[in-house]
Length: 88
Image 1 (cartoon, rainbow, N blue to C red):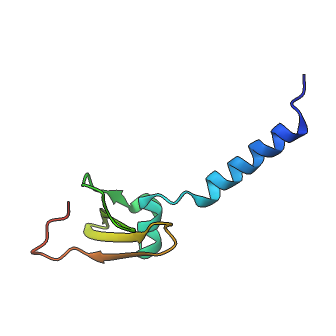
Image 2: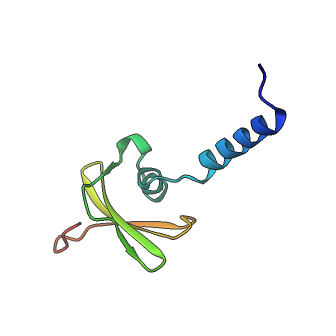
C-alpha cells in the first residue's frame, strides 16, 4: 500500500524545516568560536532566557565561553569567561 503523494510531501517539508532551522547551542558555539561542533561541550549550567536572548556556557579547547543568541538564533556571540565570573 502506497502513501498518498500529499502525505509524502508534508513529511518531506517537515523534515526539511526541522533540519534547516534547528541550531543547537553546540552548533551555535562552534559558529562563534574557532572550535568544531565535536570540540564543544555545553556546560551543565542554567540556560537563561532574558526577554529575547538566551545565554549558556560552553567549553572548548580548555577555554570556557559565555554565549548569547537572539530568540530566532540568527545571531550568536561567545566570549571567554573572565576569571571573576562563574559560568552558570
